[in-house]
Image (cartoon, rainbow, N blue to C red; front, top):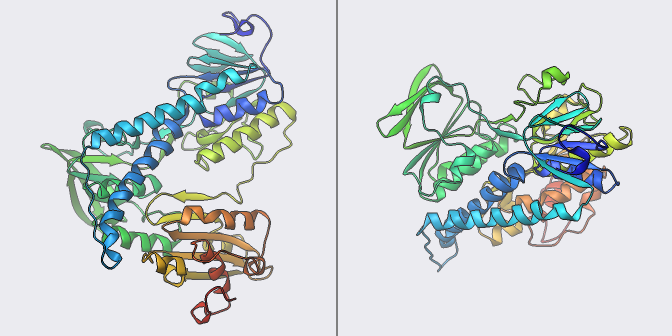
Length: 475
């Protein structure tokens, strides 16, 4: 602890105190330090937060490992080619993942602190108090605070759940032995990604969910991805109500209600992927006058201000836009507002999102339903990937592209891609929406041939043309 915040709270106060040392916390601290502010960065536990330690990094490297297995088996789609791949040592795969996590945590978090001499890193449990933050009972003085404590996997309220040795996304990614069977509860992006990953590793996977697979996605994409999951042997049951869960010998059994009938699913292990809960325990939010939403997340306005003057919140703890880049963006904005007078507004209108299933699900802007609810006269194009030359050349036509535009202004409002390389294609649509481009602007833009992103242009042309009647690169 630096001299300015010595035990007892003596000395000069900090310009800003940031609670949470993950991606949002570091982004806020660095943004403030770059403006010359004296910053207290308060962390508790492993530095680096969710993304690098237990979220994005470990999951995506294991997902890519699973993709290599699948691609070997799918090689037969090319005439004259056969290939095989198998998991020989899952423990070695997991330990390699751990090495990557350790390296990135060190290089992208711990090693950064010495580069910013106005950031004081303080380890301990934080609680909002009069005059600043109490860290393990000692006062860190600051009139401006940012809460960036993140979130953790939720545990759904299913009778019997407390008696079951369940997995979460955190513990599932740390398994050093693959189970023979796995029951996944939850059809959101975490459930979808991990269900497919484990299935490709040879685990018998069943996924159950209350709504549909990827309920936030366009229905066409949800339906298509559900079919592809079925093709890979993933058993999918949607529209269920959870009744009870219990041990069943060495296995676990879940009883659900589907269309008025009870159904029982049994597996060796069960994975809970039913959302995330904000890390707010022990912060003293009620006593400090910081309001929370119904799910416990911290309520903020479009400047990232909470209901207590001088206190801001950013990232997953706010319950919205739970992507690491949005957490970093929001935290940077909060820091600038805290120090410079609240002039910046949080803007997620052109926020890209990617689900790392295969095919990937990538989206930006409004869905068709959201656009209609916002009062737009929608103009919609849906292009199957079989109309995209890249997919034909790769002999993998799984997927589609759906675009939503405003009939009157012809501005692009939303883009939704289901494609093996969809995540790398969405940024073109992101820029188009950010810059208020029209579908005509996109139609007149040059796109490289035999790329997935060329499908965006073809989908634009499909608003008013039959693209099957065009020669290569015509239009």
